Image 1 (cartoon, one colour):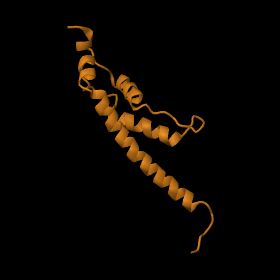
Image 2: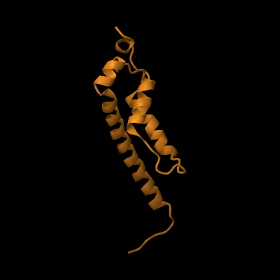
Image 3: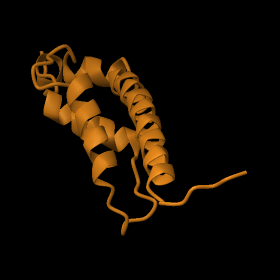
Length: 103
């Protein structure tokens, strides 16, 4: 059969695909957020580790919407991690301002 029925994407190729699919755009390019970047990277590696080989052939991969499913899974996990990060940051912000408020 043709190559696209034989060969399939590697985990690395799928990760790139998923990032494009997620269309993660930094709203403020000046604001490089190391922690958020780390989350994206960590989640991608968790959902799509190099050892993962179940993407099927290129044809199956594109036909069965595997990229979209993976992107949704990644997006959901990133959202949860961002929420935890924001919570942590808010706690830090509220603890570290050095003022006590008395009602």
